[in-house]
Structure formats: structure tokens, C-alpha cells
Length: 172
Image (tube, rainbow, N blue to C red):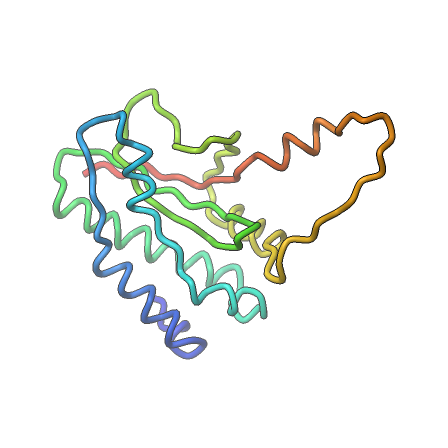
């Protein structure tokens, strides 16, 4: 399914196949351990940024890549965790920059383990497009603001701490 990546970057392809075939995820039966699950199960494809930065993957190809990983993890979970429910989720961390994804046990009434406001979307492409547009591939630019009245723009501050996150519930 992601053979197009073999041609473009075999190191990224090898990394993706490793993550897809051997996810190495762990779970707890304790809802208070959800954040620990999220951190342990979180993955980033290190070799993908160079390809994205130089625009060598279309948005469609990028979406197919993460659909492949999502489906691979869902198959793994269904094989080994029958009767349980999980949440697969994907987001872009623009400052690092990294596209990250993880899976956690699903607990009714509990949200995703983010310390910031979450803009939950139902289409991976929304996350991937925003990442391509906002990722700080050349480092974070530090802006100096003129001191006017000493107040900050609350809308800008709130937007800076909102993560756009795609998620899917996986029932096994």
C-alpha cells in the first residue's frame, strides 16, 4: 500500500514498516494510567520530515501512509486484545516538528491526554495539511512584540495552545 515510499525514501519506508509490523504497545487496566499509556505508545517517524519539508509527498500519499499505520495497529489490536476498545490518534507538533501518533485504552467519558485545548477532527488530512503549513522545519522563530499596553492578545494565546487531533475508536 505504501510502495510509493520505497522509491522516495527507503529509510523512511523501513522505519514505517517496523512501526506497522511490531508496534510494541502496552496497556493498563487502570484509567489513571492513560497518560502513561499515551507516552509509552507514542511514535514519530523521524525520517519523514525531510520528505515533507521538500514537498516530495503529496497530501494524498501522506494520508495513505498514516491510514496504513492506523489500519496496521487496528489489526494488531484486534488480534491480541479481543473485547477491548482503544483510541488511535494523530496530531502534528509544529515546534519540534513531528507528526505523532499513539493509541490508548478507551475509557468512556475521558478525553485524549493533552494538557492543552483539543480541536478534534474526523479527517487525517486536516492534521496533515496543517502540519505541512505550520511545521517549523528550520527552527522556531522568536518574535519580539512591542510593549503597548502590557496585555496580550487572548485569541492568539489560546490558538497557540490548541492541538488539532484526528482520532478513531477501535473496537476489538
